[in-house]
Amino acid sequence: MDIKLEQISMRFGKTLVLQNMNLTISSGKLVSFLGPSGCGKSTTLSIIAGINKPTEGNVFFGEDCITEKAPEERGIGMVFQNYALYPHMTVFQNIGFPLKMNKVSKEEAKNRIREIAEIVKVEDFLDRKPKQLSGGQQQRVAIARALVKKPKVLLLDEPLSNLDARLRIEMREEIRRIQKKTEVTTIFVTHDQEEAMSISDSIIVMDEGKIQQYGVPEQIYNHPHNIFTAKFIGNPKINIIEDCEVGAEKLNIGIRPEDIKIDAENPIARGTIEYIERIGREILVKVSCNNNTITFFASKESQLNVNDEVEIGINEKDLHCFEKESGKRIDLKENVLKALINKLKVN
Ligand SMILES: Nc1ncnc2c1ncn2[C@@H]1O[C@H](COP(=O)(O)OP(=O)(O)OP(=O)(O)O)[C@@H](O)[C@H]1O
Ligand SMILES: [Mg+2]
Image 1 (spheres, protein in one colour):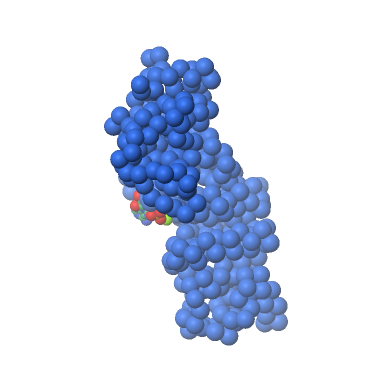
Image 2: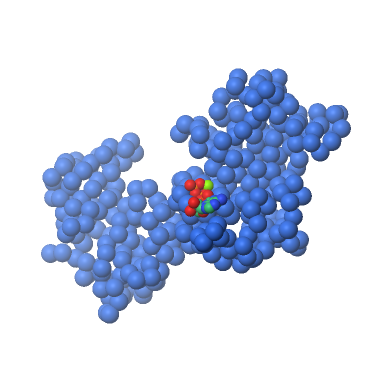
């Protein structure tokens, strides 16, 4: 079932927290809300869940306008950051709790609890209490409890943030697997760009209560529509060279670290190595050029040392140009980009 937000705005007192949000999430997809703390991700989710009513605008599930419906009438399952399992209940009872509330017969509840427990792989722990489970196992139980009523929509608000780094990666793969298997339309809230990139069919990048970009992960990474998205996605961060001029236009130019190479034959800049970090597959290098620090990767074999002078090269197709004032992306023609590179060149 599609989820649609139409002209949604939200005020808390005088503060405008969401501004005119319009979006559609297609049935069966997993879409992430990604953005910094306070940008409005949880507020948007709470409006979809019915916990908050928007100041303006409407929410649709399929063709149905559900803006006035109570959360329990919406057919949603939710998992929050602090997965509050009931500590005195067993895993079986925790998963079955929503069915008990809905007065599903004991026999049917038993079947459904077992079925969903197998999907999320907690079928061996049904008799345990939550405190006898690891964080990842507890999170699986919370997901099972959200799914047991066969919701039309699954809402996950930072469900992995209490887990350690390795378990987070494991669990995000699990969430993806469970979502594919159940085909439930899912919204996944995170401020971790790598998590969003790895798990999502599409990403909605948000900042200051507005959608900055909505697209598939590759598009968001390779074709950021504005400088906010360019800087928010990618680790290490995109390099930004400020105040470049093309005609009368002032631009900020972004270059991803992986698009910069050591190049003594056709260099665009020369600088001094400030910092080197061996990160396994490659070496992360930071070079100081004309008051800019440029970050890029070099191969593990290269013999580089701090204070070495190096020459670096880039390809004009890898420049991301943004208007300085608005931050909006501008796609320049190849010849203009070539001229721009020539201007950037230091001799
Ligand atoms: N009940 C409320 N009353 C007043 N302001 C609120 C309320 N709930 C949220 N806000 C404000 O709305 C803004 C968006 O909050 P929200 O919780 O949606 O952010 P978020 O993107 O989920 O952030 P985080 O990543 O920290 O969870 C914040 O500035 C927050 O202080
Ligand atoms: Mg939040």
